[in-house]
Structures are given as C-alpha cells and as structure tokens.
Image (cartoon, rainbow, N blue to C red; front, top):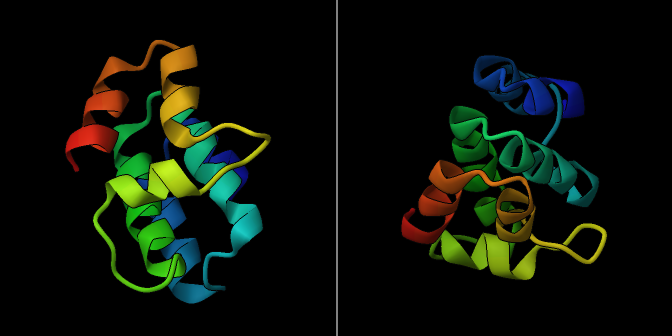
Length: 93
C-alpha cells in the first residue's frame, strides 16, 4: 500500500483498504508519503481511513495533528515538500 500511496494510486489504495485489511498504525505512513508527494486523491482516501482508526469519527484535522510517523505529521511532510494543495486539504478537510 505504501507504493500505491507514494505514486498517488487512490483507486488501488481504496481497493487494498476495502478488500484486504483495515488500516493500522504502520499504514499511517502511507498518508504521509501521499502528502509528501502531493497526491490529493490518495491523501483524501487515507485521511478518511486514519480518522476512522483514531477513536472513532473525529474532525479531519485531528488526523494530521495526532497521527505521527518519524516525529512528523502529514501536514509537516506536505509542508516540507511544498505541497500547498495537500496542505489546504489537510487544513480545510
């Protein structure tokens, strides 16, 4: 799933999430890879799944504030790589 997310293949990410396994803490890294590379649709798919993982339904901004991978959030990864559209998506949901 990390490869699909890093390449922006949202349909593949969706297929994997729906048919093979629920998202787990390790897969949160996929969200950060998609954010860093600016793949909006993959970010959207993964962000919705990460929100489901964290204590049930929450506002979308909670996912990028609370979920951390290598001491960074999806918002920080997107900022580091200059992905302004992803930043807008993460902030505005």
